[in-house]
Each structure stands twice: as C-alpha cells, then as structure tokens.
View 1 (cartoon, helix red, strand yellow):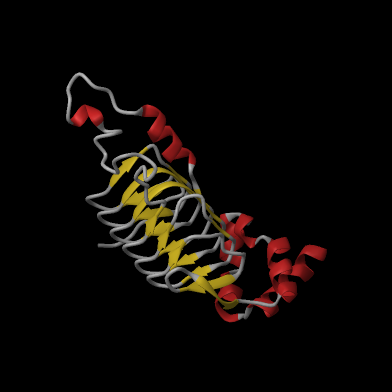
View 2 (cartoon, rainbow, N blue to C red):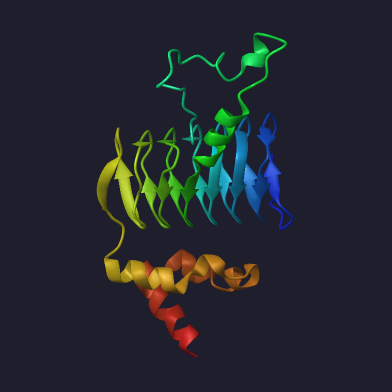
Length: 210
C-alpha cells in the first residue's frame, strides 16, 4: 500500500483506535495502533501496534513498532489494584466510574521533543520528558527524563552516550530546523542527506547570518 502523507493531518492506517487526539501535518499512525489523549506534532509518526496515551509529541518524532508511551497505573496505595475501583460501572449498573481517577491519569503526560527516535518495543513511563534529538533504544524502559541529544538503552534505561558535543547540541537547538517551512525543508533536502551535523550547521548558520 502506498503512503500518501498530507499537509491536512494524519494518514491513519487500518485497525487503529483513536480518541481525544490531535495531529499535525504530514503525520502517520501505523496499523493497529491505539492513541488516547495524544498531540502528535508535524511530520511525526508511529509504526504498527503502538499504544500511546496522555502524551505531547513534538515534530519529526520517529516511533518504531510496538512502542508503549504513557502506560497507565493501577492504584497501588489502595486495598485492591483492580479496575473495579474506577471502572465500577462495568460491574454494577447503578455505579459510576471514578472520574477523578481518570482525570489524574490524563494529567500525567509524557512530553517528547523534536526529532526523537524511539526504538522498537520501548516503554516510556508517565510524566517522563524526552529531550529533542534523543534516542531511546529498542526494548528500553524509560522511567526518568532523558536529556536532549542523548542515547539511552536498557531496563531501566540508562545513558549510553551523547550524540554530539554540547556545543553542537546548542547550535542545533538554536538553528531549530524543525520549525522550517515545508518548502524550505525541500530546498535543504540534499544537505540533510549528504552533510554531517557540523557541516550542515556551518552552511545554514551562514545562511541565517545573511
């Protein structure tokens, strides 16, 4: 099946379940994914079988298959963990769900910056922030914030290394190419493809100065 991305919003593949979510231009949601209370920034995508809840996702984010973002918690401080406590209407027709419990869940958002890569099968816990340019390794379980342009791997996820020196990270952040217009991205496409980060910066910082 060919993929036709649109400036009008998301290409949503079959068998997805999507509630209370917003999509920027040129976004894509893979087959069988479940999204609830998600804001997906421009050019970002998730591959098949992702489960994403209560998340604010930046632009150009790359989410591999079977990733779980914002998995919900059970009430571990109560006498029972079971969801009869808050989905009570499923068990007693005269009882209501615990709306306050669901409101607390929704407020515990994951925040993901721009141009992030999240590897296959990774899990990102609620209230975690993933910085711009970060990489989350396949199968990692992220339980705490990840700094920009940092690679984390493992269970629980730990820092492996920085992608670039701090000075390069600062320059990329100031350049903020992820905010460029669509046509400008197209004009720079060959340079994105062929130049390393420092050469790209040198060229486009010079352009900005003029």
